[in-house]
Length: 369
Length: 132
Image 1: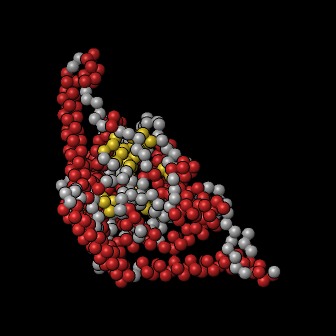
Image 2: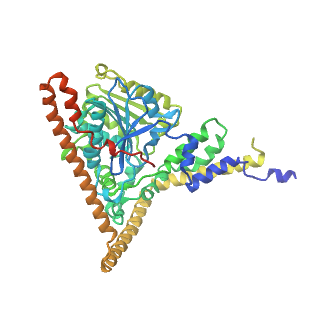
Image 3: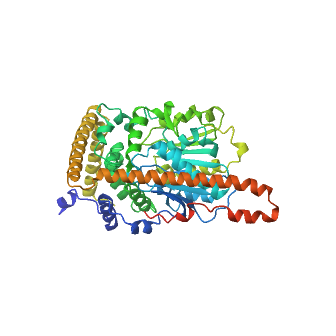
C-alpha cells in the first residue's frame, strides 16, 4: 500500500480545468463562451461600412473636449484585444478619460480584395474612416492610434505629407517600424529559400489565416509548452481563468490576409525593410517614418515575442523625436499583455490617458524615457 | 496540495517542458532547419498551384467558370465599389463647397433651410451591425 502511494500519479485536475483545456485544444469556442466571459464590454455603434470593414463608434456618450481617437487594429487578429474584458480594456479606459473613440474592424476580407495592399488600406480605407470621423464629430483633427501592424499603417498615414494634415497626434502600441533585425520573424524571412512568391503561389486572393498562424506558436515555444500548466497552477487565482480563456479565444480567432498585403509584409517590409528606408509608396508618394512631425506616444513591450524593441525604437529617428515631441516607454510585459492581462496594464492605461488628453500646448517638449 | 507521487509527476513534467522548450528554441533559431522547411512548404505550394491550374483548365473545358474567374469578377466588384464611394465623396465635397458660400451670403433666417437641402451622409444609412 505504501509503495503504491509513492508511484507517480497525475495531480488532481478540476473538471472545469479539463473542460477549458479541451475547448482550447480543439479550438471549440462559441459565441456563448464570449458572452459568458463578458468579452467586448464597451458598446459599439457602426457608423460606416465598406466591403468587409466597418467603422465603429465606441460607448454611448460621445461628448468630448478632445480630438476624436481612431484606433487602427492589426490585420492579423481581431480588434477585440483592445476591449477584451471589463477591467482589461484599453477602449474602456479611453472612454473613462472622456475621449470619443472610433474603432476600425477589418472584418473578414474576401478573395475579391486580394489586390488590396498596405497602400490601399492606408490611402483609401483609413483615409475614408478619418473623413467619416471628421464629418460625424465636426472636428478637423484626429488622434490616430495603431496597434501592431495597425501601428505600422498609422505611421504610414502620419508620414504622408497630405494625409498627416488630418492628425493632431499619433499613438503607437507595439508597432514595428524598422523590421531589418526585428526578431525571429525577421530571421525566418531572411533565410535562404524563403520565397514569398512560391509560398503564396497556390492562394488566390487570400492567404488563409491557418497558413501563417501555424508558425506563430513557434515564435515562443516555451510559453506555448507551459500554457496549460500555468492555467492549472493559477486555476484558483481570482480572475485568472477568465483572462486566460479570453486571451485564448482571441488568439485562436484569426483572420485571413489579402494576398497583396501578405506579400508586401514579407517581401517589401521584412525582406527589403522598404518602409523604414523611405522607399515604400502610399497614394503615389514615397513615405518615411522619419518625416513624422506630430506628437507621438510609442509604447513598447519589453518581452515582445513578435517584434523586438529595436523595431519600435526606430521611431526615435523621426522629426517629432528631435523636436522633443516623442513619449517613448518600454513596458515590462508581452505583446498583448501590456494592455490586456499583466497588472502593468494599469501603468499603460495611465500613460495612454495622459497622452490623449494632454492639452495641445503641452505636447511639444514631451518627456523622453 | 500535491502528494509525493504527484510531486514526482510534476517534477517529471517540468523537466520534459524545460527540455522540449530548449530543443524547440534551438530548432526555430536554426537557419538550416528554417531554410529546409521553407523550401519544403514552397515545393508543396507550387504543386498545389499546378493542381489548381489544371482544375481551372478542366472547368474551362466544361464551359464552367473557374475559381480564378470568379475571383476576377469579385475583384472587379471591389474596384467598382471603391470608385462609387470615391465619386460619392467627391460629390459630397462639391456640394459642401457650393453650400458654404451660399450659407455665407444668405440671410440668417434662411440658414436652416439651406442646411436642410444639404445631402445626407452617403453611407451612414448603409451601416449595419457587424456580427462576428
